[in-house]
Length: 191
Image 1 (cartoon, rainbow, N blue to C red):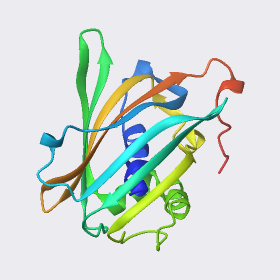
Image 2 (image 1 turned 60 degrees about the vertical axis):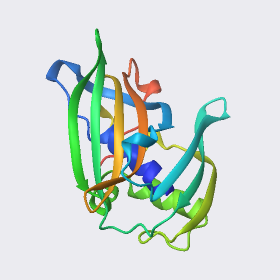
Image 3 (image 1 turned 90 degrees about the vertical axis):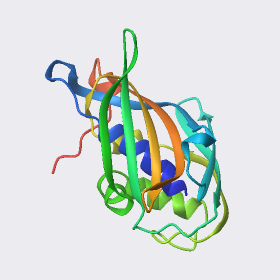
Image 4 (image 1 turned 180 degrees about the vertical axis):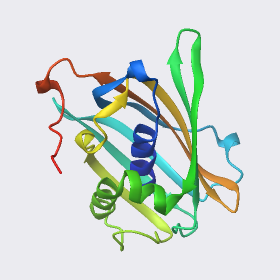
């Protein structure tokens, strides 16, 4: 379930496209995470009660109480509706839809595996068993996100789907800010 939090955050951060003049070396940050209104769901298979807080002066953390009502496996789907904050409100920007396992592998695997281990799941990956789990002070590794990013603030309504039905949801607000100098951003690993 923290897998879903990590997935939502990272997929929301990483899957956003950009205009040519608004893309460059930047640093992502998490502004807010909250549950969606219950009317957004067809049924609730999974609930994440998320508390974003400062772990110390320089690191954001997440504490999450996870309730899983039905086993979550890699056959679940995701639907992420992203809007960008501009003058006049939040305008639809991009829609991302994929298999949960593929999305995790592509955007969030290291953070997800680390989160599952911290929450004491019986697995390092799928499936996730029915039960209640707690994750305390999970520090987000912003440097694991792409450093080339579209500048701006974004809101993502992130849904977990089972059989085409919405069964879990988080609203995530993230921001990519331009690096003014190299000290502000993460070092890119040379491949």
